Image (cartoon, rainbow, N blue to C red):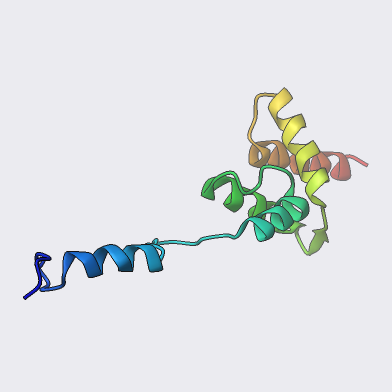
Length: 111
């Protein structure tokens, strides 16, 4: 046997050290390469890939706004504008949109 010690699996420590240099450690979850991250930020809005929660939020903004059977397509900048307007009124985007739809409904039926 060589002078290298054996670890719990019976492998030489030297072999384990060489393996660590050959392979990247496995990570759980999603890994996004830098080039793809830049593309996502361009499509979803700057900062969309800062964290998993930011990415989820940005992707959810792509969901369609639907009022009854009418679908309103909004771009990421338009969603950002809605977010800003909601923040000015100290509301979440959801609450802001619910109030906007309620006002629209009220205005519609008062014609």
